[in-house]
Amino acid sequence: MKGIVILGSTGSIGCQALNVIKELGSEYNVLGLAAGLNKKLALQQVKTFNPAVVSLANKEDADWLRDNLNSGDNTKVVYGYEGLIAAATWEDADIVLTSVSGAVGLTPSIEALRAGKDLALANKETLVAAGELVTDLAQENGRRIMPVDSEHSAIWQCLWGEDEHEVEKIILTASGGPFREKSMDYLFKAAPENALKHPNWDMGAKITIDSATLMNKGLEVIEARWLFGVDYDNIEVLIHPQSIIHSMVEFIDGSIKAQIGVPDMSLPIQGALTYPHRVKGLAPRLSRPIRDLTFESPDLERFPCLRMAYEAGKAGGTMPAVLNAVNEVVVRGYLNKEVGLMDVPKIIEKIMHRHAIVLKPALEDILMVDEWARKEAQQYLHY
Image (cartoon, rainbow, N blue to C red; front, side, top):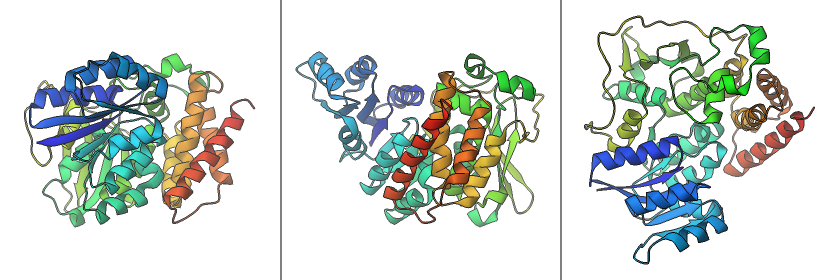
């Protein structure tokens, strides 16, 4: 039996993961949940899965949850940062699925690895901000990092049984988001409500905006570099509007393997939890015949966030952490209509140019740089 902890259990990935686990049956046991601010959904999840521990964001919600549990419930209720770490390091857990949004997922992911857990990673910011630190830690502790992003799961699946030294290139596919065919003039005026209309995927607000700017793909480039040990010059991004081919791997003999399927997150979630086995699950089947699959190169003039992600990754050290932190703040500002869509890359680039890189950062360095970058970005929201 595999014991599983889900950080971000009330978010989109967390809820889908619980549905997958329910379908997989008794061999998979939900031991812990971290539910953030959604106390009512957390209560439903506790009553359904009876975890050993559940964490909420604050004491008031934790007290409310305790009051609403039955006397026979054995779930330990914790809260705050300490509660998140308690869930991530729960003694009997085998796998920790990190699906919280943003840089908040970094420290619990690190603590899970230190505690000897395998990491199912749906939080790309962990590897963006601290890729070298996290992957070194996993190797030192003999733990796996299993990607849950659809693109990285696709690459991972293409590499099963392959010699990593025979990989020539990783090809990340991107839908292009809602503004793929829009003019530069349109992008300067684009409203958040339009940016939130992703053509293929149902995601949270932040990641949907990142898809609209192609920052999401830029973060995935940095993540892929650490997951698969491939140089940035050997990671290519292709726009694939149909989102049927989730990513590809090109080998030294010229052959290319692709993972193909319906745009649905249940398959990559299931793949991480059941590895190294494939089992029947909830993933819908792709209708056939498959026609009209198209590819195009990204326009880096209209979508400079992708270019800046490559630049941050190649600069190394703490620069990707700056990229990520500023992006989180400015995207929130865009959603609140404090800045425009094209202000996002503009502000990120300004702060990147002001950053003095720490090339071999410890966790403390990364957290300090993250805090600095957020404060710098906040000042631009009202300029």
